[in-house]
Length: 174
Image 1: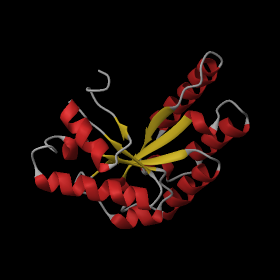
Image 2: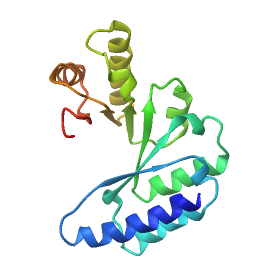
Image 3: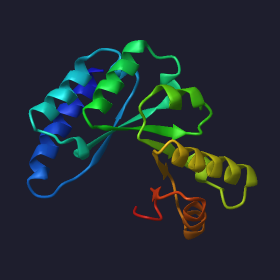
């Protein structure tokens, strides 16, 4: 928790300086443990209220595996952060811990399909079906869908055809 807090403070200072040159949006990974207490939440809210950061310059990414067993305080803190305008992404969706209830319970603005699901998607029908279903579900929930680990044009073209609008991976940029 202390390391995450210190990294956020460093990120806050860096983004504040970079913002003077060019607007930039950064995804910051947190765990459910980081949000069990109010300390990180208060730091994020303070940075936004003090105008050291803008809501569109920061996105929190959190893996769902820890959320399933997390304390109520985690949900409350994520809601507070989301309510002030910071987007929250569920990272590594499809890694084996997936619970659709987590999508219903938390204020996600994006769902990130894990690269293990994307790897081999052009050859494995089960992966295609799961990805297509997740993409459709994200659209119905009105949240962004991001495919991680896109490494070639075939994966990219298939994901675009399925309706995925945001991709990450070595095919885009190493």
